[in-house]
Image 1 (cartoon, rainbow, N blue to C red):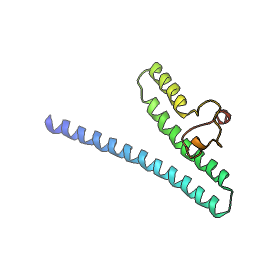
Image 2: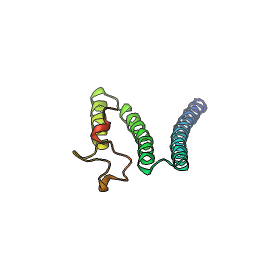
Image 3: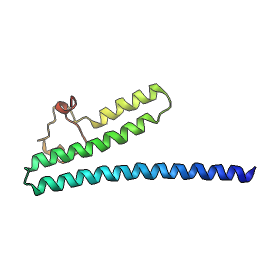
Image 4: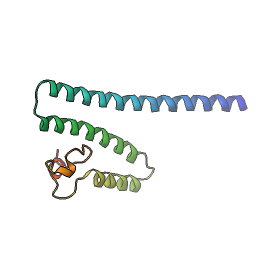
Length: 118
């Protein structure tokens, strides 16, 4: 019986580690794509504001994915709803803030009011 339980525990740990590795690899692939897109835009001479916007959308998509996966792991619907509400609060820029504001200029992890509808 002890051998059987140990064997099952080993299979479970192996599958958990493989799942984590696949998830981490997926994020690395996403950030590689964002970085490659940024390098291509710079190489093609696209103006800096547009390069920053594309890069910010890439980083923001990874942040949204991470927060959505975290929120989906909660056991009850109420906890998931609260987590999603908190996620949008964390991602939202202060009211009236624009991408041209100097204090938020390099913060690629926030979303502005005019971008929420996208």
